[in-house]
Image 1 (tube, rainbow, N blue to C red):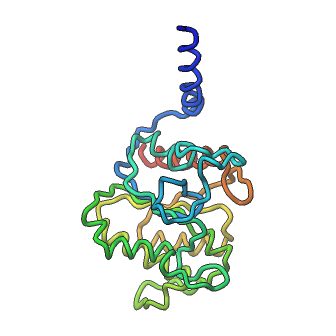
Image 2 (image 1 turned 30 degrees about the horizontal axis):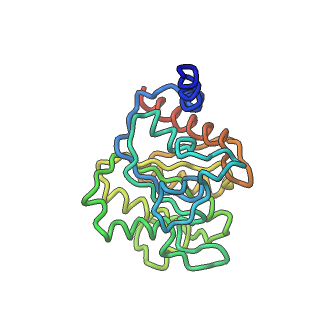
Image 3 (image 1 turned 120 degrees about the horizontal axis):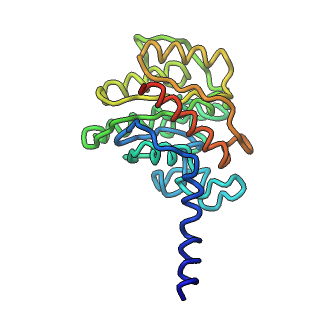
Length: 242
């Protein structure tokens, strides 16, 4: 009976021990974290119920079958931080122009953030860190990039990539003046887009984490890629903490 009980305990604990192996805790704490992302940051049950997702317990092909296997799950665990909200929507663009020129005003990063602001979410919820991981769908959808311009932006400008980024992060700085705001820059983007985003974030004083190569399948991080993403984010946080 004791041997059977021991075997059951080993079966339950071994995956957790293997997951934590080689993953040291960081001295950095991000506090209450909000994530704004696309498919790379989704996991069924961890995002609003009506949002489409890419990862779930059925994602056996890529191995990301638990929230703790996602990049954000690993970052939260290793920084002893908590998830306030994961507002990630699979296939979403930052700007209001989606795939095939569709109107994505309700599902875009900017649209979702504006909706939360209008609902009073930020007045009632303490957010210590906002992590935004997006832009790849804007790139893949060939959304119009527009101009890097910081003044006199209109509703129409929200349909272009660079103005939408500026509008999103300007709003984030307004409603979360005390929060740490981080943007994760995807490796896949072309250099023109990367350079424009670097200019925008330098101007807005937003921290930018530039990812290197991570393991992917069908354009999405697999289990190994999720760990590599988390490791790179933690490396940045630890370097900034020194």
